Length: 240
Image 1 (cartoon, rainbow, N blue to C red):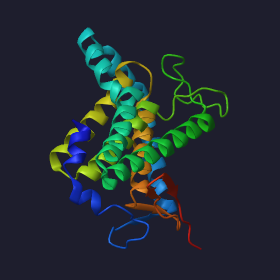
Image 2: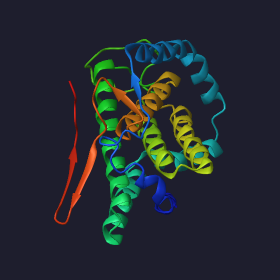
Image 3: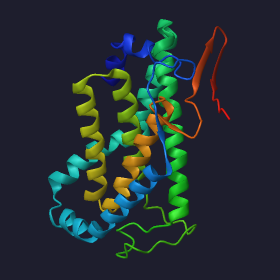
């Protein structure tokens, strides 16, 4: 259904063929205080980690476990891998470069989100709630990997990338609702703290916005998906 929704939006996709060479796509430059604001918000949420953890575990049930089991697939390879490969395949088979580029942007988004999430996990070294009750037990480079939530990062990266390409209200609301549900599933399953989920959402959303050119860091332009009869590539430009 997600692939069909993107296939049905060729006009929107055509407008995003190459944001690096077109000045028509408005972009917001991310400043240091934007990052500081996000970190401040996540830090504030850490004050609620214990109470929210108790709330979700006290209200956990067989039904909530079943719902969480279904939702978390949206943050796993069977969904994001299928959608990405489906878009690229559909574009190549149909000869529609716009669809192929949409798949390429999604693939680049997921790679960036995955790398960023793994780097944060490695640097933070926070224990999961099912491993320790110490919400402040950060031990950098220890192998503890609670922050950020990887499932939530991927879910919001996928939701943002698809929502920006489909550009329909129903799709945006639906995709972000499912992504939020993935975050909830990690709390229900006792795999993450509330602040882990919030950080994952921020990383995933930012990754997608950077790749599609809506946001920029310094002078790094969004990537261009290069397609030819016998080649495909990714070009990234940095201006001084």
